Image (cartoon, rainbow, N blue to C red; front, side, top):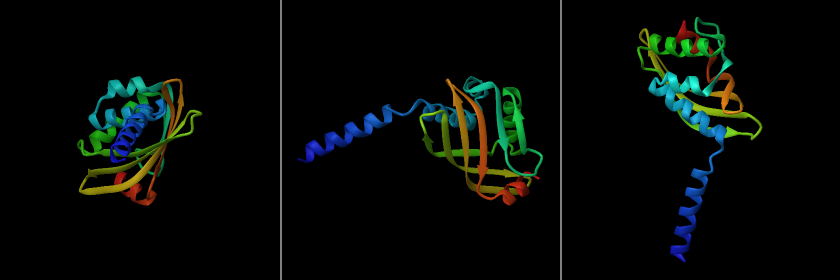
Length: 148
């Protein structure tokens, strides 16, 4: 009986890892590219007319329209944090209708300040590209303080 249970468990894990929804896989590739500074891969995953919404009231908040503006935002994040910014993907949820919600843990250091909190990005995906990225943060006042 133990052998059958082990085989089933192994099959189930392999089947579920291999059967990841394409939108979840796209989001995972995006997080890997972001954390690795791979802007070419990010360009391949983001639509040319995409918009990223960054909450808050600080110099890096607002709506960043177009692939170039989004990539420049990521460059600014890296520059402002001297490369310390990391977004560790914890989970991805999909609805099968073009939406994915990524849950991540975000850390960075900037000008003697440190941020360490959870957040999400709600993705709208059309075809194989992210067209809208709407970021949500755990503590908006803390985010404003960190980026100001």
